Length: 81
Ligand code: SF4
Ligand code: SF4
Image (cartoon, rainbow, N blue to C red; front, side, top):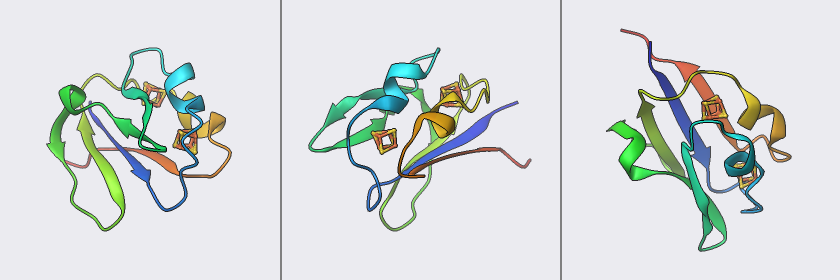
């Protein structure tokens, strides 16, 4: 099972709570004032306006990042086959 992890860069404050809590290091440490889903973790990038991320095979869907995000900027959903 894979998950789609995306960050809305219009909402993200770049404080990095998501990267602090993720047990499998899906997120890079923030840079440029935003956090980022690590390119090396993305098997299929998603191209949506202001959104960064994509399908992450290593994400376990624990939702710790979603719970930790104060801006509702990050979303995690199961990939539909
Ligand atoms: S759902 Fe869990 S494993 Fe997936 S990116 Fe968020 S914190 Fe990491
Ligand atoms: S926790 Fe949310 S607001 Fe903070 S850096 Fe991560 S995505 Fe951005």
